[in-house]
Length: 423
Ligand code: AMP
Ligand code: GLY
Image (cartoon, rainbow, N blue to C red; front, side):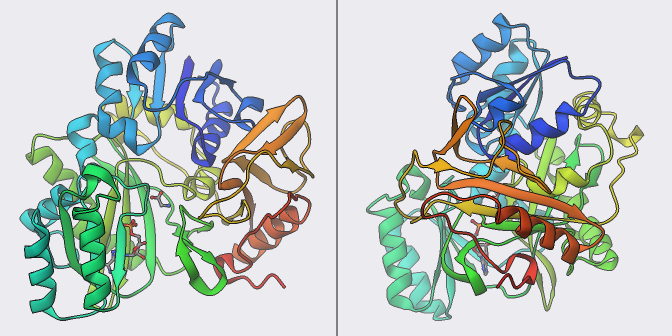
């Protein structure tokens, strides 16, 4: 099969490298891909959100299957457009992708079907939102833009002033555009966070190995939130007992709720969970693989990923036995100086071979450009260095050892991924 993966980050690189192992896949394309991905797939210069061009390309090149990895093309309906053109896809249609595209939708869904989540209210009027915050008078309080905001639409406000500022900047100054025309104000939850990605064909739900993301930019969870500075899998807090409870109280009810709403979800449903003192609760849903969770989850997958994609498309996931490797995986993200704020690009990267790899780990490229055999930085998150080991310590040691082989000017990474101390 000729397979096209839409997107151009570390997550897409991890999907591509897994698909490369499949005997069902004869040729891989990525659009737009990136420098490192070009070592594993043919990169096509089409923006991930350009639905029309993507469909035209897929038709013209007789692509058999399209994997739509990022949130925005899914929320815009790329899977629908591909299916209308007769091309099979992995990724939910627009009606189902709303589970990530609108926080108001997902919160109302959870309320209607009794799925545990933080208490909340939705507002379309900034004054009403501010009055509600004043009356509630509990801090911290959480303010979320309704729509997609590049992972930046969440503010944890420590006092009334900060909360008011957040509401005004989202609803009046529109810092996230129309995403902020509605806001969700919700209860602040505490407890360890767990990411669970799950394959589903809307009939059964098969969770993948759990993982943990590290969202803050600096060690000891300091500094601003990022797209994710590193991940480990499995998540040590996610016991079998909690997994069973999540299946019963969260995963299956969510899948069934989407069917009842006439929005059956087929693809990868991402559960951002918090293990609160009152049990596991949903922080957020995503309609896609997580980034950088995918960079630790897929390396542990022991079943042909293309087979899974086909089974989901054909709604026969229940027949498939999905196997996982023993052991653990760790991914350390190497970021550009200044990220998540302003950062330079175009800096040469040393320590990578012609294939963009280094000894002892797998290097997933998130933001690189390639010129001949040389690689240059082109994004905020540049590389995700993943190793698998017999246990978490082993995986982390290997990953950090490989990170030390690689450098570029201003490069920074966290030294405490998975609780590891890299000093
Ligand atoms: P999100 O963009 O929805 O993943 O939110 C970003 C981060 O904000 C999450 O990973 C949590 O750490 C935090 N967060 C979101 N909602 C809440 C909440 N209700 N209580 C506490 N922390 C939250
Ligand atoms: N790592 C968080 C996300 O993919 O949204």
